[in-house]
Structure formats: C-alpha cells, structure tokens
Length: 149
Image (cartoon, rainbow, N blue to C red; front, side, top):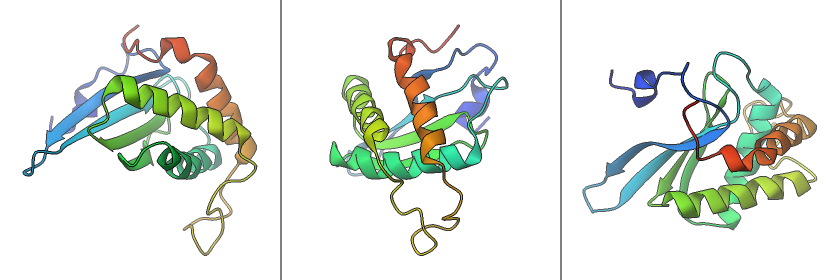
C-alpha cells in the first residue's frame, strides 16, 4: 500500500517504541526523517483525546527548545502515538532530544496555547493525563529501540 504504516503488521509490534517510519530526500538534498513514536500497544490501548492533544501541544513547543530540526509533531488517528517529522535528525540524536523533551513535559505547569484563541479546541486538554502518559512512556525508555515483540 502507499501508506508506510498500512504495511506495518500492528499485531507484531511491541509498544512503547520509536522507529523510523519513512525518509524522503528533497530536491535540494535535505532529508526528512519521519519517526513513529508509539506510546500504546496498537489495538490494545490508546491515549485519551485530551491527553494526546496536550502531549502534542507540549512536545511541539518544548522539543523546539532542544532542536531547530523538528518540522512537525502530530498525533496518530488511532491515538496510540505520534509522528515526528525532522530535518535529518538521526535516531541517536532524535532519541536523546525526545527523552529530554518528555522529561521537560513532566515539569510543565501548563499546556501551551490551550485556549480558544490559539487552539481549535482549547478546552480539550489534560495536563495531568498528558503527564501520566509521558511518565509511563519514560519509565520504559529502555524499550524504545525494540519495535517487534
């Protein structure tokens, strides 16, 4: 199929994990690397909408404190994780930045731009739900590089 994740056997992966989902070389030679940042086991668990929304906002903001190579950080429709699109961030560097960003989220006192002026559904956030999901993700940091069960 044309969509990379549709070709991934979701019954054989073991979350949490971080994997390269795609790479694209642009005409000017830059390389985009898309990461699958999976928090929950597919078809077994998922993140609540308000928590995933808050993780998206916080990571999009806080990760940029550590790199100017983040293009986008977006939730998966299945609510089991996120896609991070980067400008050439290699896995070792990306994992270090991701870990630091997740640690930052645990110290956050608010969700950035969680209001009706800056967000399309500003009331749909949960700082505590986001922190609980991030804490669980970080507690299993040693598993992030193992994708398959």
